[in-house]
Image (cartoon, rainbow, N blue to C red; front, side, top):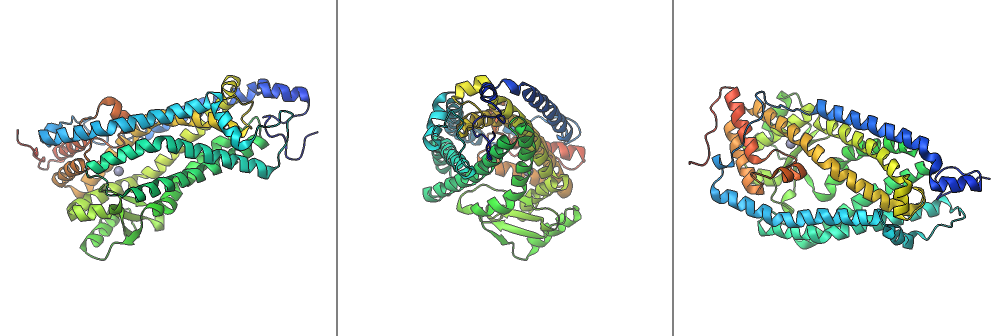
Length: 464
Ligand SMILES: [Zn+2]
């Protein structure tokens, strides 16, 4: 007879011992695996269509504009940017590689299950049935171990990167505050992991063969929730915000937003300077809660004209609903990923490699981590490709709104110099890291915009 809480570690509901055994071998899962595979293909195709349709492939009429760093950056500036990139590459690539190796090592060998077995105890092969509370505790323990471990192995590389940033004057943080930030990140990721794992296992438990459908819907909702909650819940953990004092700049920004048809309620200043010299601004919230957030670093270092340009860019995002599009694309990606996850976690071969018998075993979370890591890594370049075009469109919006390509070019140049951006990234680095077009590309687009609108084209900053 089925016990009230159902079996924990055998995936499908169990009626007989024979059923249980075949269930462990994964055989009756074939039809649901087929359904999940079809769903993965359909969602993947939908994702491709949404990306293809929603990406502004040609933000400025007239096609691609060729970038030439030598027009606006001296040889010394180009060399300094190259040197910074070369210093940052080893920790960046090593951190990425170690994270991947550890995730794959834990998920595709019995090592992960062995490690997690320490905190979950070995399940009783006769189908012991721990109470709900114990199962939840085991999952939380698994989430803690895996999140902490995956952060810990990349921590030295993050510290290495931080030391490079500091050497080049891009970080103003002390190590104590840096470590606090890393712990806060760990806390945030832990909360997401625990919520996701508990929800997933509730689904696995209730719908042993169809949990992929619930995971796809739940993943979509979780992503949407995180996107909306992030500026309100997570941002304040890192920065505090104050209202921009009344004055010409505040009035001007509010007026510009109003004229643009993107009314905002407030202009806030974030105290970003306590950790970074990076310049940034964004528009967050929706409808009546919409506000412009400006980093104090931006106000301290840039003229009102340039602050205006940055905010005009952000208004472009708000006006086009870029956050909404981003949420939709990520949500679809996660939903498709959930189906792939089901396929991985019901694959007898992968389960055997991971040293577990079913996805219902909390120790299978190592296989889950490996799958999620691979999927995330694969999704990155696609997200960046879309993001770069969306960013270019926001740049065009800023130019349309300010009609000031000269200040636009000057600002992009100073941003690139300040952030020591890679001025001519390799195709590989560009695909992997660049969420924005490169500085020279943005400057070239400013010039193309000026030519298109018959206003004076910004002259090169460097005389040949
Ligand atoms: Zn942007």
